[in-house]
Length: 330
Image (cartoon, rainbow, N blue to C red; front, top):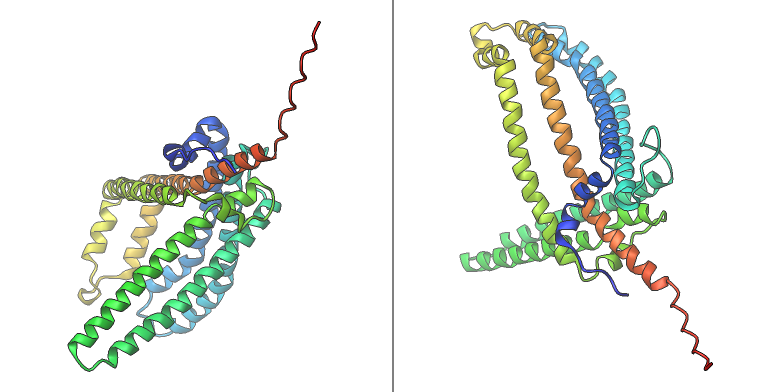
């Protein structure tokens, strides 16, 4: 199978290339993702708000029974919000991968719960099961190394065991990184091919998993730089818009007779004031834009590999051109 050359820039920034092709459609997907995430965040705040109110009256003697009742009510709502969060993640992943792999945006509402999302659910569940197995094996491995090291009678033996354990851990980490890279394109392939494709991702990443590692490493550097910028913007917004509340929190001292109810009241006033609403808008918008952009960039590498593999398969499956008929002498 003859594959196109791995284009590092196109693979690393495939998300920006797709957004450039369909800018309004990408903005529409991002708008719906932000809208649904804001709805879940608002629901979580509404669920936790009674806890804040009870904390303001924590000095009362009969607060424990109310706290237990509130937590019991919260458990059901948090399960529903968690389920909503999982569905939003699957729908967002499906919408972005349709754009990245098939250049497709569903009409009106780009989010769906259909065959693509069902296949993505299967891939993600297998990934979760894999990491659960890795976690269990890691615990057993660490326990074995600690037990072996504890049995050593001298410093030299302990040092050797520690060195061997470190080498084993490094080898396991390298092995896990390679496994993750070989299967990284599975979600994108499952959407691109409209079929559940897990092990075909190994074939798609053949010969390019090292370049994929460099792409993901570059994206991690991009994430660090972006996180610093977003954090600075959010901190500036807080300093300018919530200076009074921050000052009250820094001066809060229960031992000196500070009233928690006043802090809660000030928090409510800050959140409902024009400055507070502006703060929330800046923090939420910058955080969601950064999150959505980075998730798109992260999915873009696998999407590029999936499209690259699909082009190679299509080229191999194309019928060979018919030989030209010999010219007859006139």
